[in-house]
Length: 106
Image 1 (cartoon, rainbow, N blue to C red):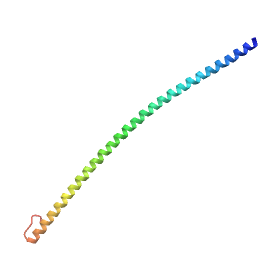
Image 2: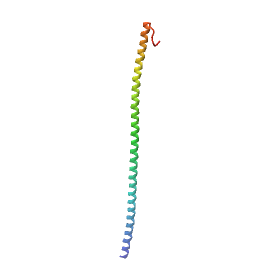
Image 3: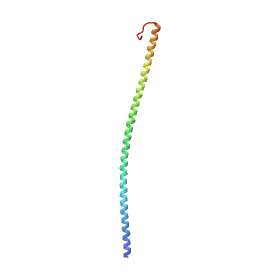
Image 4: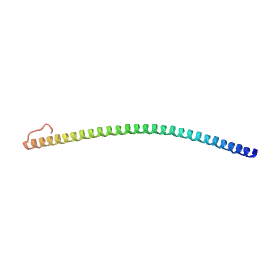
């Protein structure tokens, strides 16, 4: 009986060692999970910052594109007005040449 009690004690000791190892592994897993959560949160922060910067750049491009569009529209209007003025002056010169009178442009 003494021998069987010794074996039971040895088995119990072995189980205790294994439970200690399991507990240590569980703690390692908990720590790894905690570290993973911290890295995930940091990654999310960086992603949000990247999105903010991207949105700022996109807004800047929209603003500059709109400004360029307005400038192009203004240039188109100015070009049209200039062409009309040139045609007017040319027609005025032609009319005065036909009338044989001196002209202010000549």
